[in-house]
Image (cartoon, rainbow, N blue to C red; front, side, top):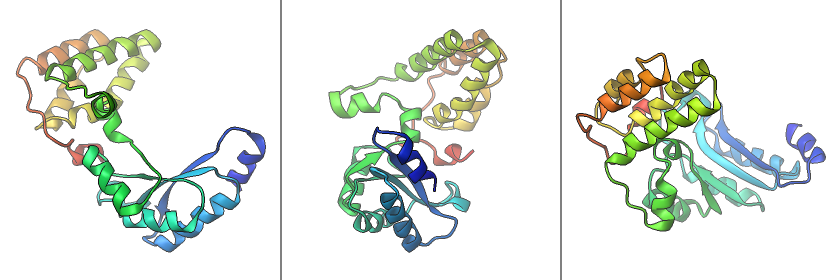
Length: 205
């Protein structure tokens, strides 16, 4: 299998991330986790959703506990983690060894400083980060690629706001990075309302 083949070729720790599968069967996921361990995985990250659901339904955190009970290697839980309370709830409910964070780290990349250093962002952080991102993309990618990359991740950025669909459309009108920056400036002239938790419906697009 893939995991055993990779294990034979590398000496560094091997982590495997996987989902419940195509069917809502936690026993299958637990069996699969044991197969990964037997194949040489050093740790697992498990996202308890079935593939056909994409992100239309919440993950079933209780399945993480079943995977954790099946193996002796560390298991990291993943799925719908947006704040510190979510982290505490997952750890308590599943007994997992750690947590893997995905979309919220794209939507609000400063969360790690908030959680570990007491950083308290103000309203300007959204505008500042969007502008900084545009400059970094322009620095490291050709113009066409830079614009495409910005538009790809703009949906996560827009999910932070009420009426995020409208903000996303405004951000993506430009075809050059200077136009993108003009759009960013225009969006923040009106100080859009920030939502407490990013809009999950935007994340599914």
